[in-house]
Length: 598
Image 1: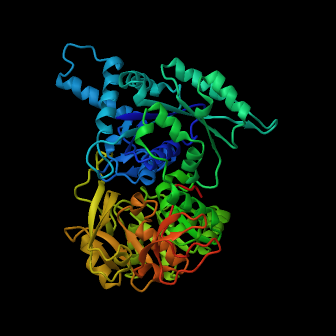
Image 2: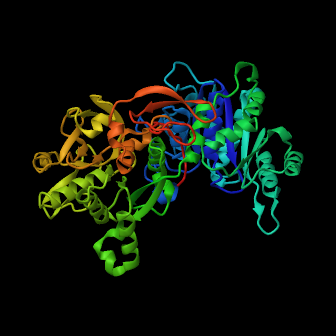
Image 3: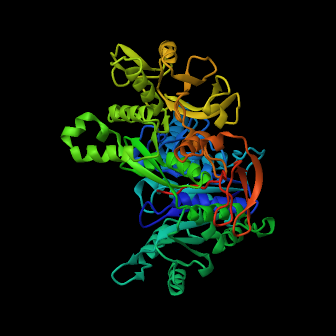
């Protein structure tokens, strides 16, 4: 097993996750099997109980693991399925060591950070790295490890020590350290400054780790003299200094690495040159080129609680991007704080009220993502009502589905006090209730989590057709509340269709309004399984409905390779009425990329 460690210096938020994902992608394109591990030095056992404002979205895995959003990047870039153990936290390590101590595994010993914590970290890495994540048998060839935080953080010290020991133990030819650092450009003088990176590398070396490759984040490509200076002071060969400058879309980051021959530097350090080929990134390049050519907008109103931080809905944004590129549209997100739509806000803050409603009414489609707590719920209900009454394409995810059910009960069934017991425990018409198996005393890991099966109730619904008329699908869940099965008959009689249910038939998974152009709510989170080349079916349906392409999407197409203007091939599902674009590609391609922040 070969290991690539990605660390960060100077400041946080440099893009270590995207860099680690891109490194994994380029190694995979060289013919290697790749797995990934993310180390988060916080004391939480997992990301499940953390606020999205604090740490971005919680990404959910097939096995129910609630993990850091960077694992979502790994899955999308590498098209793999990770496990909860691929996210290491200080809390998990400490818990494992304490459990061993209580069992008596360390009987007679004084349990200390060194060697017990550091040994536990190394054992965890070796164990998880050997787990296949690409559907094939046997371990991967390379494990890319990302160390969260910044070099010098107190909480990451045990991991730094463990990784220093680990690099010595596995040997020089099996371990490559890539340090991501900042080379700022001072606007006053326009000069690229190397001193922050010099200090960062010096701190890293003082902790027992020496970088093999420097990945320098900057607004522009590094000058030759700057690279020479970094090479001299950081003791890194000049050919191993890579510039990660700002690009038009995030899919170009792996192409930056390839163009600067980062893969050759990594393979040389790992003694893998003879076992690999040149990176095959033709389809990826075509996808990046296509994204830059899009200019006709599709506007999606995102009505949520955490609109102040885009990372709170990162997977939703990426799934929307996948779908918009598939429909040859440029994605424009209109962030609508749900609480700004509420009637009470009209008096308290009339400007924000008018602004929120203007954005909502100007959108081509409305999406209400998942969330917890009662803040903004009435605003989300109003958004669902507006979409239903004005025939605007709507997709509700998790809570977004539940509030659509509540709105339908209030407006159509005339149950004015209909609600969820999450927001009103004493409501007379509980449309949404707490699940019987849930815990009301312990928050962490007690929801209905992970991949669960949904069975379609017939094949005529839009959702079933979008999924290719399959009888069932497996999607990832994260919820404590569900539609009240005792009210399903009443809701169905009113015209709401439950087109997807679980294996028991009592847990509602998908709702639709047949008479509406596109009004769909799902209890699961389809965004977590959206991939390059395979946009999430329901997001594709939403965006297609928003730009008048839904009928084409619902028709079965043929899978053929088509040519981009640069001559490379990209797999495409062609619509029956596909049209030529100016760049020579065909309109109607299901092609998508990954990770553009909009």
